[in-house]
Image (cartoon, rainbow, N blue to C red; front, side, top):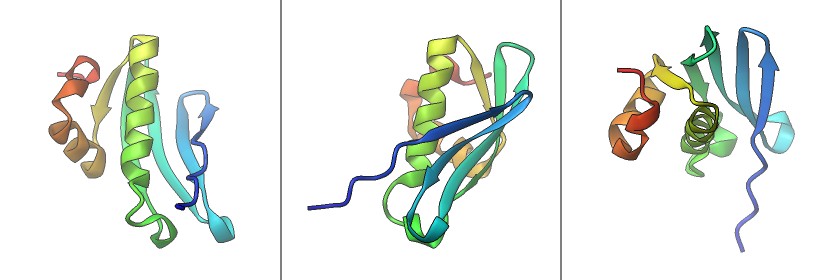
Amino acid sequence: MADQLPEIELEDRGSKGRYLLRGPDDAEAEMTFTKIGEHQIIIDHTEVPDAFRGQGAGLRLVTRAVEDARTAGKKIIPLCPFANAQFHRHPEWADVLKQ
């Protein structure tokens, strides 16, 4: 039976924040973002350490940001190359992609 992946945490620091997965041995997968006004966020960076490789951790982080943006009526600008690639792979996310 596969280990349950940890819950994604959201750290909101005013104009910036990050989505975080904590793993074994203090490993952290994170996706950072910057808020632009009330209705947009920029995904700046996604980092997934080796401890999370092959588990879909990066995709889980981007998916959570998409779900949160959809709920809050926000648009996402995916400047991070990984997040941008995920948006291209997931056309169903077009409603939250800033065009």
